[in-house]
Length: 115
Image (cartoon, rainbow, N blue to C red; front, side):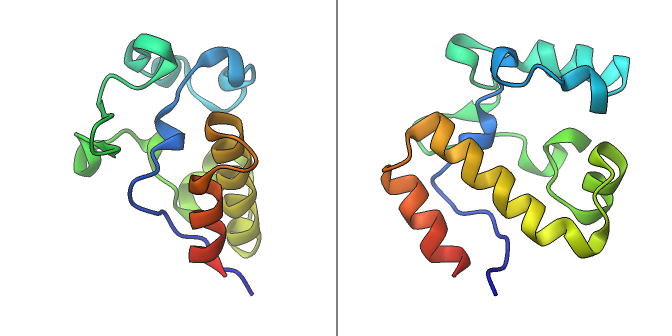
């Protein structure tokens, strides 16, 4: 069984382009939505994303909506802890494919890492 994990050198989730996430207001509070939108920078990338190293500059202090945790996904999306693993994997695969492409080395590395 595949197990969700984050992989270094990806950063696909840091592409915050609101046009790719039309349902933000459904799972973020008004305050979180304002915060989220304030983080969107050039090309839709988070202003805290270090593009050279492909990592978050504020990882330890990142907002709740950037945390891939069972309790966060339960609160935001109504995903039960039992469903978390598969749901998180699907989210990552969709985001990586959307940002880097279906045949990208990033998606290949992700799929290898969770195998």
